[in-house]
Length: 244
Image (cartoon, rainbow, N blue to C red; front, side):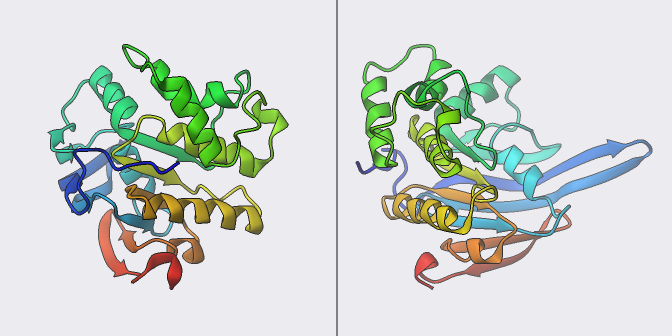
């Protein structure tokens, strides 16, 4: 099943816009500037890797993009909507409707089976879509787990669990798919299979932001944003992404 781009997200139009975004943490009498007046735009259909050394701001940027954290100052817009000043409840709604997460540790719910785990993001909506289960089944097929819908996470390999996590991240047709070290816990063969799945999703029009510390993984993306000290240090265009 091909996952169509959201109707409002024509390829190349701004999906995520950061303007002068800073995030400052207080550590006793000291300030730590995790992000420092960062401005950038991610556009529909793009595939970016976000890289940098420890302390460069990768995790902070991902948390802000995912509406888990909020900027100390600056503007953050998703699909044209300003989100940096929203309440916690409003941020939760943005997360549920516009953002898909793929984590290094999968973060599946052990008591739920594959189908139920895929449906989790929609359970937080005010009203579950009528076609929710059909969509979940289609996504399970899409990631190669259509015959394992009744299995629980402990009955799956790490790669299969990550496939469930990817299907779960796609169930709400997100504006952006955020992947945080998504291959970090996988062996090289399984990691290659997951990256191939990301390549396919990108080809189908999904907007993907992949945080990684591995250069070989970073080069799979169409573009690379490298951070240092909370600022943009380098922007690389990897030509054809996985084809390079």
